[in-house]
Image (cartoon, rainbow, N blue to C red; front, side):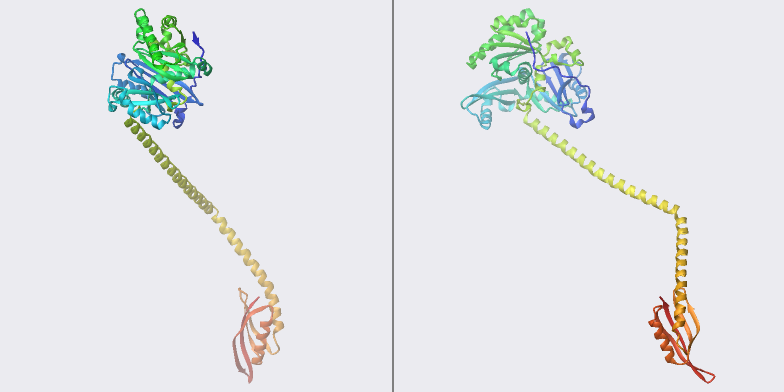
Length: 502
């Protein structure tokens, strides 16, 4: 029996926005280095939808070169050194899991209790291990169930160093068991199904081990590692099927003894279980419960990636943990095995990249402002040069027009002066008193008038000057020269008067 999943097959979009706009890259790559296989799975987010874009797997025994060189090529193909998030999946067989019930509901107190208890859960010292925890839920009043995951520091560091030598930066280290749990609860079973089946078991079969999980009330409450995988079940079916069934039976009994809660009502097979023909019916009898095969992640690969699933080597593998990590709804709740020193290095690297990006953007902004200023000044200079060229081209016309303007002005002045002069001369002769006669009248260009003449007496001259001053035609009148003279026994006054014509 194959249960129908809640989700439909995702569309394989060929548009790769990462190449167009790398700063919008939200890709995720999950890599797993097991005891016999290396697996890569990459998903890109396009139009707010995460889609599997690349798959790579290789058996360690078939790699004829240093593993770092092979991983470096895969890194360049996947673009792991440039963008996106990289998560390393730690196989279940390399870690120790404990489900603890701690007498506290305060997360801070729970962390302190774990710090005190973790050294008692393994034969290794605290300095030789890395550990992480995940709150499962409240058990009873004042108690919280916690998933404690422990791994040897050397195993984790060895894999991290291998990836770092290949130029693959790792952001998180997570346990494969949580990936299986997230895949099953998120994609294979509906909320109604999980509510109805209060206690179920999930068996994820990989190449050389099997991960046994128990889910009760939608929470992971138990897990056990079995040292039988698809290598044994496919190649040594007759000799391994009974042993496998016995191992599963023993794991179920251990759970029943430890939990003292609900009994397992059904078992679901995932991973490479579909490659083992008739596995479900064979296990149903010894386990005493129905065993069904669940749709595996390979069923959701697009057409471009389906040739991978047709590879005969592919049938030994389980990609369930990798798919579960990629499609997890809340990745921050998962356990993270990344050692503290690696977290600090990663944090510093991110900060360094951010500062570098900030510096580059600042320089770019300053450069844009400088470029805008240069463009502005260049445009102004070009505009000034254009104006000068236009001025030079019309200079002759300007000079011609200026001459015409001066001639016109002079003509107007002469015309005005001519009219004023006639009126002024008429006014002048009207004002000349008896006994005064003019010998010279000079009207200059700037409306200056010079009068020379004779008078019978000095008083006649002064009377003439006074009359000119009172006239509306003359201004600034002054007597510049007056002198008595005698001619033929007759005395007379010789004078010179200056003024301006209004």
